[in-house]
Length: 281
Figure 1 (tube, one colour):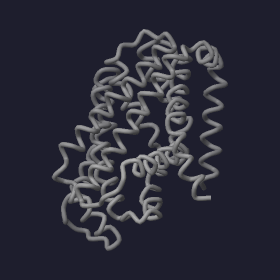
Figure 2 (cartoon, one colour; figure 1 turned 90 degrees about the vertical axis):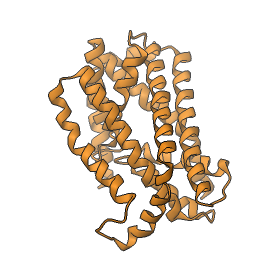
Figure 3 (cartoon, helix red, strand yellow; figure 1 turned 180 degrees about the vertical axis):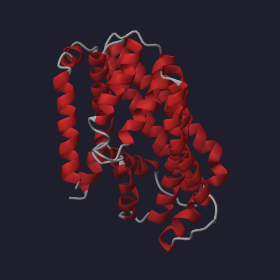
Figure 4 (cartoon, helix red, strand yellow; figure 1 turned 90 degrees about the horizontal axis):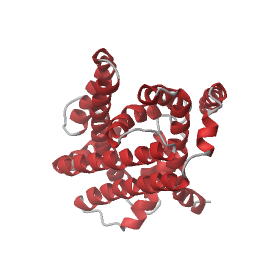
């Protein structure tokens, strides 16, 4: 099934690029300095997110070096770049066990802040919908918003149903509940940082888009990467983002070019994660 999804993603992406071949011309003429600033922005995001895991584990009495958590985080990020729904990030608990770190604690921390992260993304996407699209489009965000809030309520409480395999995870997640302001602050800071990533890429393509527009567009487009149909929404993200960007620029080809630069800059920033997997060979 994973092979089918990968092939589907490659086919969709190839069709998008073929249909808008002039997007390659935009990419080849992109400003390399702006592209590197985008990669740097995403690198800052990775450091922030790794620090969040490290902080929450330390608050649970789990003493682990930050560099080790950073390395594990990078491994999860590079895995998420090539897995449906970006589920590869959940490889971190299994990798952590290899260093003697409590995998249930790590999973509980990840689930807690992922739920909060989704709330922030939906908030940003909602603002983008009102800014770029029509109010009626907001209805498409209602269901994921409700499901996300239910997930947070379930993780941070002891309400039924009780699933034995999840009880330890829920217990660990509840231990992070008191740190909700910290989790939200890191999520918001991450939104700003990735907003800069997108803004620099718009600048790299010499597109007249403001930071506010890039800041609002990013969470709405990024939700497409979580589509479970293809690896990290491959093809779906590029085509959907191209449409959204065209609403600002009037050019679908530029939108395709921007989305390809977003994916390539993200993967380039996540590349250090390969080292963790290579060390396991």
